[in-house]
Length: 108
Figure 1 (cartoon, rainbow, N blue to C red):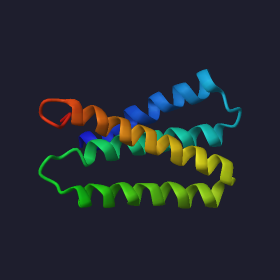
Figure 2 (tube, one colour):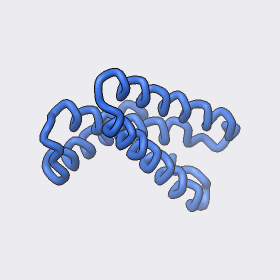
Figure 3 (cartoon, rainbow, N blue to C red):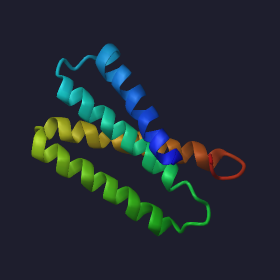
Figure 4 (tube, rainbow, N blue to C red):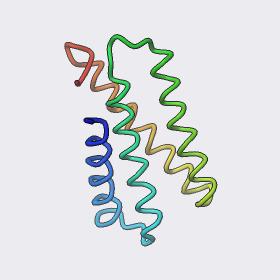
């Protein structure tokens, strides 16, 4: 339930930033980048479970990366796909770095 909320928050913030601050000029690219940011934020929250092994967390993040790659390759050019992958990785890793610095090793 909360994972969906994190997707919506990430999508909303990503859309505001992509549409009005960065301004790519194409609504489809802005929606794609926003969905990628929402997915990264939701997956980072989803795998933020201290009882899970690192291999399971990495596998789930790899599935997210592959999903972004496939959708980006099908609908956009390689430059936008690469930019989306970089955004996904930055958001995902930033969440995990902040979580690792907390006392509980989790942000849940």
